[in-house]
Length: 571
Image (cartoon, rainbow, N blue to C red; front, side, top):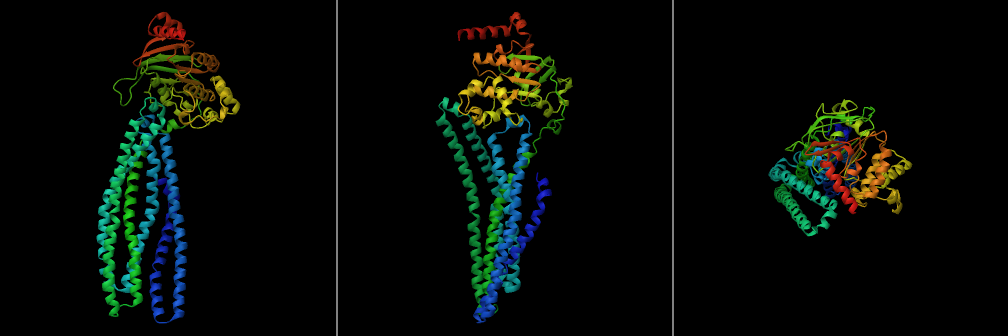
């Protein structure tokens, strides 16, 4: 997952590590200088004392410069990693199949992009720096204490340190598991909030605010408990280390004081020893934070690695080979079963649409109409030898090339939280005149005329600032502006009134000229001009023919037409 990043940016860690080690080494020079200064001051050698004071000042300046430099390389590179991971994660999510989004909550996916990426960044930034700093600090300090002051005093004073490290490792083992629980709780609560915001109109319409709030409280309380359990475990580290290092200071005070009295070490050496002991405390105490953050980073890295292993859409389908799609569509005994389904969504569906032809599809909910559209756009995989585009098996046509030639208008008319013009143009590079023409063809001109900001009106999240009919017509204009050779309309006019529908259908006849069109509609009036109409039931074609032929047949289509016509007459 990070191979590409380390190939490009990994070298930055080398100068960062060198500068960090140099900074630590310089830092461990100050106790020696301090001890010497005290000895010189006690001996009234003020000129030498001044030189040691200047030495301490230059050491501080060197530590400042080297610390600033290593942070630039190590912490700066970890921030580059954060950007790299988020870009890689977003790119991966863009190319995952539709099936994946039906199996995973959006709140969980948001947790990957926010919490998990941040935890991995900390592991390869601050955790790496603190680990190297702790090791070098302890190594240099212990070396100076043993060689420069007194080996026995060093040995006895540091006896509690291995015990402290043991407790740090022992307590840290449960951090990873508890942090994973915290991440899962965050995902659940994020998904809950997002679902409630997106479904706020339905929630209020059913007066479910109190019930949803109570459900949210339960999830929030679960997250609180998970965080508290993690905090309790993490909080044990610092007191344990402080108690054990209190023993180190006690040994240093008693045994070291006796060595000074007996004249085995000087007062300056004793001061330097205690300074080194103080310098060791912070790195050892940081082991707790290092283990904590490392466990969190490892847990997040494993979660992200598992996500990145999800199989993407094949590279073949993501590559637009520049071919021209004329628009001839043919299905031969097309069948499809969803991976988790217990029955076939489509069964032996056959039809043929010449270039510029129009196929209408009607039927009850769940009859397989939308599944057919998902197969035509390769959002679902068709079996080889069952679906053909321009005489070629759809499995041999790259999805990118096919979708470039398709204008797809889904039933929900999803819109982005930007202006109506941006939603219609949709990164196609369309001019304002082309957007205006497409909006007019979709029957939006009267709505735009009464909007204060016109085309600059913000649609809102998922288009919630607009009515259902307006959303559908913006989505229809978005398809028109692409100038596609194949137009797929999935119950596009279900949310508009009959008069608006008739006006759009009149415009649509002009838009469909020379284009292949497949139109799904519960309103049969939108299908009567189609060259052929399929009436589907339970994934099969129950009736087929032109509008007039199906009325003459007197079957299910004719019964639905009569029912809808009578309802319109009553209106």
